[in-house]
Amino acid sequence: MGIIFAAVTIFVWVFIISWHVLWKKQSPSATAEPSLNQSASASASASAGLTPSVDTRPELTANTFSVEWNQTIQKSVLLLHVQNGATSPLASAKNVVATIGYKREDGHAVGVDYGAWMERGTITKIETEQTKNLVVALTDNGKNFAATWTGPRAKFTDPDLVPIGELTRGRWMMVVTISAENYERIFRFLLTIKRNGVMKCTPVQKSPW
Image (cartoon, rainbow, N blue to C red; front, side):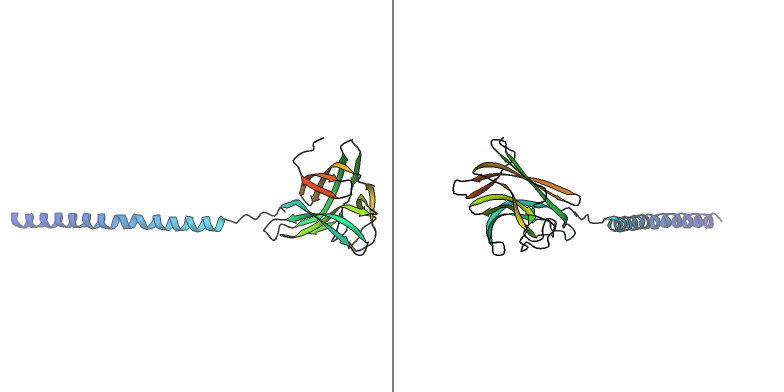
């Protein structure tokens, strides 16, 4: 009887030890699996929740000029090149209007409320990575003038681009304000007009006077 009891006791202990060893081997796997699932779920949720931000604001720059002869109006014009350097196709500048102010060293001033765009009258649209040209001066009979359209125009070839104020010899502070939908930027230039009428524009940070 004692032998049977001892055998049963040994069997029970072997069973308990075997079950405990088996449980310890399975335990890390069992606990690790939910953790991996939770990690994958969190990663998927994070991926689903991340929406790439798209900047829809235009990035207008204006610091280069050129002089061109317009065959239609038979006059020379000084153009400021305004470029949209944004890369997003949604970042076009819409309903762009330019206001130009000229102030000479002695305080004499000339203003243009609606600057003339070479491509599309007084209001234009500048697409991403596109450049439009703003007329900042017009030369007529050896004299230089600020200029604008006499009314809404679809093309620069319309002959109603007219001078509105003479830009005489000397140094002028020229301030160009570019306004569009939800956007505005100001550019400043030192406009120098020599005795022979030649014009030179230099970007500046602030007015010297």
